[in-house]
Length: 492
Image (cartoon, rainbow, N blue to C red):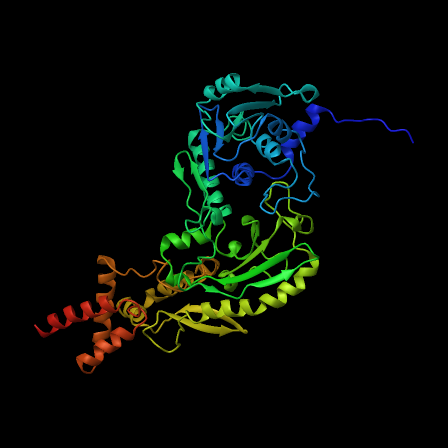
């Protein structure tokens, strides 16, 4: 059969490349940082300039740089075959990353690179791309173009510039504040994606600057925290493609974490959505916060995070997406991982349960009572508690129904889903109990007075009674101070 060449339309292919993958700003910048790491860069500087609603982005590294021919090759669409054998440290995959990532945000891509004192620069402009015609500049001409954007290359390295950033600004719909927030969101994601490269203890540490500020890697496993449980790493050999490692972690209970750390592990979607697998390809995070259908998301599992590390030789069986934001767990691994991790789920639940405090029914120091109805649990306000009884006693009998209505309304409006989502039974994250200040003192003093009115015994026994009440259970210092002050007034 005779064959003919049937090349695609340049405009259609290159503009179509803008929709390849599911890039946001962080994913697009991440693809460029991948190239810098592959080029053995130790420093990557990102500049995001709003430029009065006409923004541009500059990514500059101090890597090995490219000569003229290599630059032209790297600017070619689909410059690499994903089935080719790659260097073990290569973070690329399809040969589209530089182009698809850049065009997902901008219409004009400028890449300049210097190697052995030779500077080359190439430009793809989607508004002038007939017949795949790409502009090429060298040395002084290339230097002048870089200077237009306030950039330069003094030694080996590469500079990438995004101009005509229509996607980045939603066609100029974003204002300065909204643009800044998009940059901040990208920063937070990059600190997670590249946290292993940013680790200060790493031999070949990578430093990434964003608008002059150094990024700080965020370890989602809190590996250095003394209360983090790290389990044995399981090595799995797969089809002569190399070894996949699986390391389970159980994060510390929230009572052992400060507010800033809790906020970090919650992320933008909350604790529940950040549990599960964290898949790394050549130490770079690809996907996280998924169970791949092995387990259901659950409130008692949000402390579990499973680190999976794969080499780039497994790209095809994991179906790594072009934007490196998604992967698919091979079906034959699901059963093995479920068996391996079932015990981890049980241990995570124990972390929660041993932190919980039981509510004893019949104890009038408790404000809440736990009631079983039709096999389900319900929490009701304890009508026999000192505080509730004190209100009933001072109210006219005919008004009691109003107070009872208020109590039932509070019971019905208890934010159960919010409490479950927060997943904490301690004081660290909740501020329900005021542990200091005038209001806490007033409420505590009132409670002590009510209890003393019905008390008949020694002062030491009364102090013990106060300290055992649910309100003062976590506020011992406050309880003792109030009791001391109260006794002094009573004695006088």
